[in-house]
Length: 241
Ligand SMILES: [Zn+2]
Image (tube, rainbow, N blue to C red; front, side, top):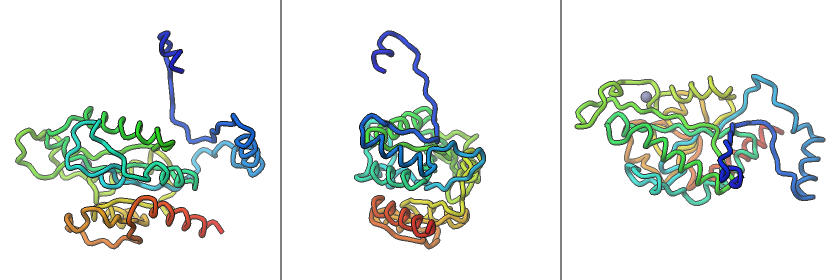
C-alpha cells in the first residue's frame, strides 16, 4: 500500500459493516469456513437493525485532560482497544457521542476537533479497533465567553443529556435501540441513556459526582471499560439463549 502511495497512486477507502476477515493462515481460513457454514458471512439484509454501544469520549475512551487542544495529547485509556474489539465481536456497532462546547466557546474549531478524532481513530486502529461514527454537539447554552460563536450559543437538543445525537445515529445507521447501551463517566451520559431508553454503564472514575446536575441511575457501575464490555457481552449472550 505504501508503495502505491509512493508512486502517487490514489488510494480510496470506505467504511463497511459487511463480513470481512483475513484468511492468510490455515487457522484463520478454518475460522472463516466455520462462519460460512454458520451463515455469518451472508450479506446483511438492507434495513436490518443492529444494536450499538454508544460511548462518551473523554474519560471513557481517552484520558480526561481538561480541554484537549492538540491531537498528540490524546492518550487512550488502558484496555480500550481490546474492550472495543470484544464488543464488536459480540455484534455491537460502536458510536461516539460527545459534547464539544469548546467549539461554541471559540476555544477550538471544527477542524481542530476533527484532527483530535483522526488521532483517536488512528490510536484505536493500532489496537485493531474501530468506530462506526463520531457524533459531536458543538453547542453551548451560556453566553459570555470572549471568543464565542453566537450562532452556536443555543439551547440545542443534541447536547447530552439531550438525545439529538443518539437520534441522528439511529437514523443514519439503523440502530436497534432496545438492545443498545450507553457507556460514559458523566451523569449527563446516564441521563441521556434514560431519556433514549438505553441501558447504561457509568464509570466510577469519572466526574459523575462533580457534574451532579442530573440524578439518573445507571443500570450498572463499572471500574473501567474492560469490565463494562464484559458485562455487556455477557448480557447479550444471555438474551441470545
Ligand atoms: Zn447541540
